[in-house]
Image 1 (cartoon, rainbow, N blue to C red):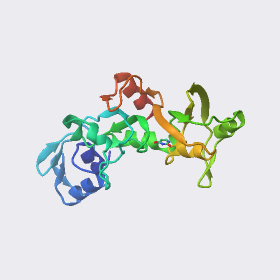
Image 2: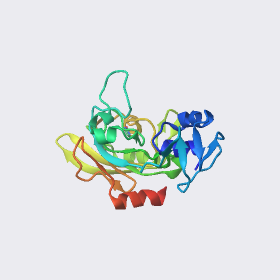
Image 3: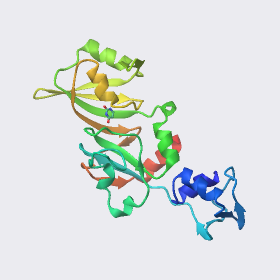
Image 4: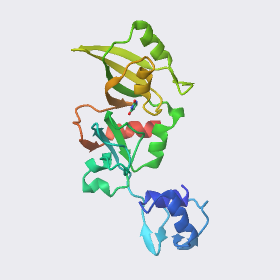
Amino acid sequence: MKINRYLAGCGLDSRRKCEEIVEQGRVKLNGKPVTKLATEVDENDVVTVDGKVVTLAKAVTLMLHKPKGYICSNSDEKGRKTVFDLLDGRYKSKRLFCVGRLDYNTEGLLLLTSDGTLANMLTHPSKEIKKTYIAKIERPLSTQEMQSFSKGVLLDGVRTGKCEIHYIGQENDIHKYEVTISEGRNRQVRRMFESFGREVVFLKRTAVGELRLGGLGRGEYRELREYEKEYLEKIK
Ligand code: URA
């Protein structure tokens, strides 16, 4: 991998800042100074910064059950709580970032990772990773509306891709749907329902690809299990 990516992977700083560290002549590769950003490094090389050996940090990926009322960002100018406020000190220092976003009012499965390649892969449109949601609305869709929904709807003049929608049932006056989309446009599920004149009163993401939220409680998080990591490695 490129030297700046390696240094970022060691937890030094962002890739951009690591480029500056290289250009400042502070990095040696197997004892020799390097300033070229194109320099390739692998795990058998010895890399030092300011004379200290740096090694690749093991990537961490967490599954979090984001509660409603938290934003997916490192900080918020409006002072709202962020998903990082939910983490304990062990993970706060790990330079994790959100894989995609859930909006302020949406809850459910959110991945946080220190692995930039994984985050890019999972959010890249070409990968078409499926995301499944439970959405609740007050007035049910007709069969015809459900068919149109599944064929894609126009949002800002661009049609969404095909998706799956299943009616789950009714609780009091609230109708529950399971929706699976393969894109990640801003507030996509809410806006798809809005295009049929329905306001989503509850939205929860229950799965990303084959990863499932399962019994993880609101605000709880855990590291991925071995089989989950293997699944992600396979599709990476
Ligand atoms: N769709 C939405 O409307 N909100 C989200 O947070 C994710 C998908």
